[in-house]
Amino acid sequence: MAEIPIVYVRGYAGGTSGVNSVVKDPFYGFNEGSTHVRVGPQNKPEFHQFESPLLRLHLDEGYEILVQGSQEAYLDRHDDIPAASIWVHRFYDESATTWGGEPREFRLEDAASDLLRLIDTLRAKTKAPRVHLVAHSMGGLVCRCLLQKILPDLGRAPADCVDKLFTYGTPHGGITFDVGLGAVERLRDAIGFNGADIFGPQRMYEYLTPEAELARQPDPPHGWSAREMPDGPGSFPVSRVFCLVGTNPTDYEVALGLSSFAVGARSDGLVRIDNAYVPRAHRAYVYRSHSGRYGLVNAEEGYQNLRRFLFGDTRVEADLVDHRLSGEGEHVTWQAEVKLAVRGLPVVLHERQAAQWCPLPLPPPDADGAPAAPVTLATTFLRSGASRPADSTTMRYALEVRILSLRTRDGLLWFKDHLEQTADFSDTLIVDIGTNETGRPGVWADWNSVIAGTIRDHRATGTPRPADDEESGGGVWRVHVPLPDSARSILGERAAIRLTATPWE
Image 1 (cartoon, rainbow, N blue to C red):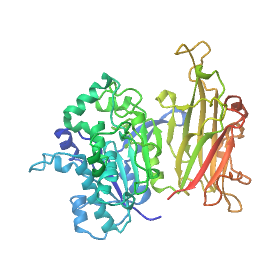
Image 2: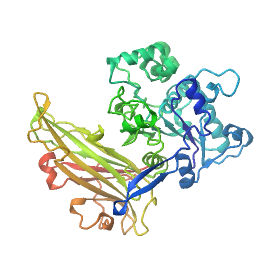
Image 3: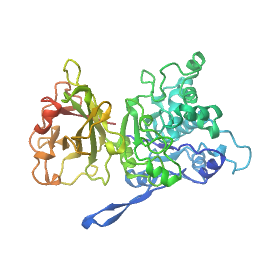
Image 4: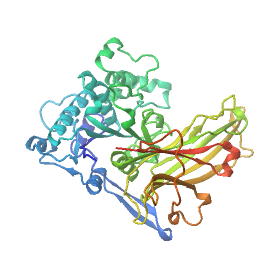
């Protein structure tokens, strides 16, 4: 696998005092880690340390952080630079008042143009074909401005410069509030206090739209959504984008003294869950706040998703398919909760829970009784050899699935026969991906309810389940795992988990 430079792009700093504070940090905060307490053996608290994404990439992947007075100075003085290197886009420096001279007013488009200059320099001096972009919050919008506006305006193909884009808590759909019925957003966008109008629809449309199109249509057309990235010929492939979505608003308020009241509980404390991802992009939900010591960037959960997206070699998707929900029509709402864990990691990589405001809604059956459309439960990336026991030839992950029903009467929840947080169905699918005794690649999957003994002692044996007729060759494997008998009366006799494993570069 070719080594590719990684460029970090930070988020919004606010006004002049915030900018001056940010530029004091050599790595714009990406060098900050965190500690937290886990419950270990004998129910005793145990210390767990996450060293920071910069240091962990240095330790785990052999990436270098190159500085000589500054990273910019290092680039100026050296022509032969290793591709396995990490760089921080210091776009706020020219807007700080602490360096002397006349500070430049911050414009997101300027930050994106400066990012392109850094990318071109890195490609020339590392001989790498492209770079990876890793962005927090507003930094993801800077990256999207580059991909959707700056490069197209120059007649350049975004995929020729950027290989993958990973965003932590980026407000892809802007920042909106639960209070004020839109008045707060309109006031923010009208006065542009500290440049915060960059999170409103008009400014987002301006910096996400090529100039030729903007000249024809200066205002967002009806139905325009900032979350959407163009995915046609010449555009950056949405399949190369990963969005990490935070679901914990509380720690952001505690850590930074900011209230999540205005944004609402269904958020990471600043960005609403529904605004934090690009449709059709890969995404994972983790119980972390927007930033701070318990934030997305400073968390093991964020790093492990990042590492596997950038360096994994197998993409696995789990979908609920061919299900026909039972119930009483409009009086019953169905939800799924999921958790995804990868063997060898101390954290859950993806979880969507009702208690965290992000369960998966399950569509009702069609009027003609046809199965509901497939529902993607989780997508993850695995890496051959990573965290694999010496006696195992497979990569393993576990997908916990819970199905819950909510009944209503006259538009209100009906609690007469309700059991809070009790699932109608709950089980965990243990999935192994690898090769059998003959060297043939395949996928094994078993429900925990039928596995005797501990999961760690379970070994995938026998031949792989036969590949579905939808896929043949090309290294793509697709299998359907029937649901246990206990779920069929709820989801139908044909309901299954469809697993698709695809090579990932």
